[in-house]
Length: 288
Ligand code: ZN
Image 1 (cartoon, rainbow, N blue to C red):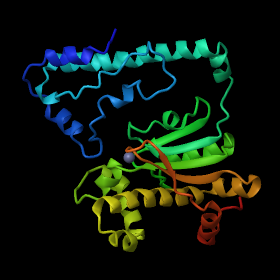
Image 2: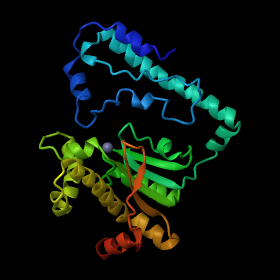
Image 3: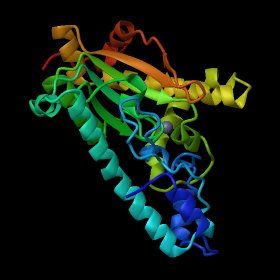
Image 4: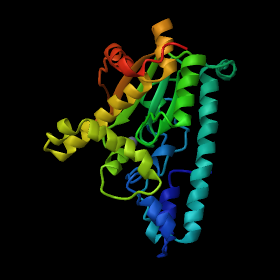
């Protein structure tokens, strides 16, 4: 069993020990660096659906470098077990609210939305939008990219449009995106290079506008928005979206950006019709 004092107990038992170099470098990676990344996924405080009995995250800023090996193992076991404890509480709550909840859930899915978001642990699609299980088909990757050679995202879009018949496709980026920031650093990031290259391409496409923004943070924020815009265009370029829209008038593609400072979503008000028209000059795939 885990309780809110676990983090404190662990900290109290710390002894000076170094952790393996690989673990240290993973923790300090520029993509995943975040003061919340060790605990945000497990935190129950951001969910309005959880009860008072739901186990709380320790929310401690643990100094990994000072942690004994046995304490790291213990911490890993506890953070693993917390997920199952949280799951039991969630299932109990749901059943208490609606005894048929899981009967309905097992009957199948009919989501209205396809959500394509960043893998960042701080932006859980359902929690920030109030959507319930069954409302959204979700795909997430680093920096919410839609690449035409990525079989994963292409399969997700095709399945969502052709089989689930979603009405809205949302590409949701976020300010402070580590993936976008990493893409703009003059650094070899190994396997991540080809993935992040897509963001450098977005910069190149909008170089004039971005270079004209003198403030670095403002330029970075604008790149986040333009990345969302370009990924929306990539969604519109797919055959399934074009063909479904010609036949059904849906799905509509939306570009949104989430802000950590106020927790609000900003609608970039992408002009779907005009993007579609523009794109079909070259990428018209409506005839099957
Ligand atoms: Zn991100």
